[in-house]
Image (cartoon, rainbow over all chains, first blue to last red):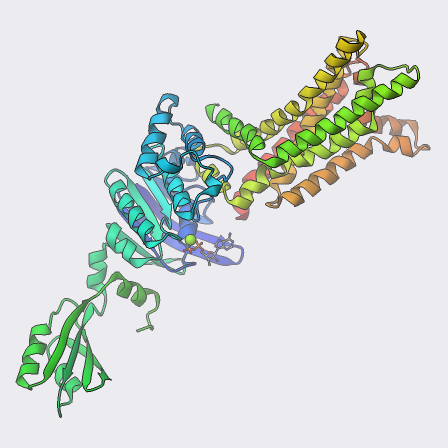
Length: 311
Length: 251
Ligand SMILES: Nc1ncnc2c1ncn2[C@@H]1O[C@H](COP(=O)(O)OP(=O)(O)O)[C@@H](O)[C@H]1O
Ligand SMILES: [Mg+2]
């Protein structure tokens, strides 16, 4: 659906993205993850033909975004960052205008606008001025606009930014459902979002792609796949030394909480050493009050990739 | 073509969303009404060798209101889309650049024509009350309104160009006001500099909106200003289109 080759964009004196290469297949929900300023919006603006790349090329549904820009744009529903809208139009009026502009046949406009209003929960504000809407509703109007012409591909730039937790949950649900019929490329700097909604993730940092895989594979790849936490009274033993002898444990850090020692164990990826640790504790007569495993999250992947020295 | 009309209809409607439109309408009605009133009361005092319609279209009032309205009509056209960022959803929809440029120009032109419609009423009312013709001939109306249309198109296209150059409406208004005033006063130079040669005077005369209006509102249809303004309008619109396209490369 999307094919990007050596895409580079330089602003005056600054390279925003450098040699991006990736593909998004039909039906995928691709997450575009990166810290602020990583180049997510820049990439999306190029893909939506809003601005040309400095070099490289990209196609959408086989249409070159530069040479066949009009056909490429016709395939695409784009929701820009911060959702700019005409504040002096009413929701209905705006969606009808956008539908007509995106070549929805005249007799289908009412039906399509009705459908997207239903889908995005805009029924109760349909007669309101867009300028008077809250951030959450503006976001939905942007989404409804992106959907109104039933595009094959949706490009959503930070669709949940600025929303409250309830609204975020609603928008995520909506996106997940949309993924059944559309190919989606969505950007975010919020990690759980990608884990929950996306089938594949591109991690981009300082204009370069650092990783591109399914969330599960990314988790498997990182050095520290998670950790074990043990809180115990170890008596005269040197707990850390003993724990390091357990197979699969790489590293142990110790803190204390009053009488209790708190051990944080970093383990090899894929290893579950809890049973071994428990056996060790009973053997050495340690009093254990907690033994738990923390699963690695995409956040660990992200931090590891974008700040290699942070851990 | 359908997209052009979709865009055009939004442009025309958008004038009536904003208070600026109503302010311009009211201001324009006041000034043109005052113009009509003063010309009539002047004519009541002594016999004059021209018609009401000629007097109306050639007064200081008229020209004052005339040059002021263009910056007001055109300043927000592109500048506001840039400032609000709505240019992004607009240009990522499958529309061509020229469709956007022309829809904005013709939207402004339609609003401009709407501004002038009430003045037709002035002449109708005058005739109904006085049972005298307001103009010497039908051609005089045609000439005057044609001149308004063509000069209006040119000045609107200048305003379009000014608006595409900035995202600040006020700057757009100042640029187009300065350029339009300058162009307008170019035609006045021959009145001010009395010792210029007759050929210079004649040359400047081609650009003198006031002289042209004098001729046309008498009903003498002169094609030279029409060709001039029509071609200048096209030049300005081409420049606007160029500037609009180059915006992508400046990003
Ligand atoms: N119009 C612009 N002019 C100059 N630099 C820009 C412009 N837009 C973005 N940048 C720079 O390009 C980089 C990437 O920005 P952006 O794509 O907006 O990042 P993201 O969306 O991932 O936060 C940033 O360093 C930003 O400062
Ligand atoms: Mg961004």
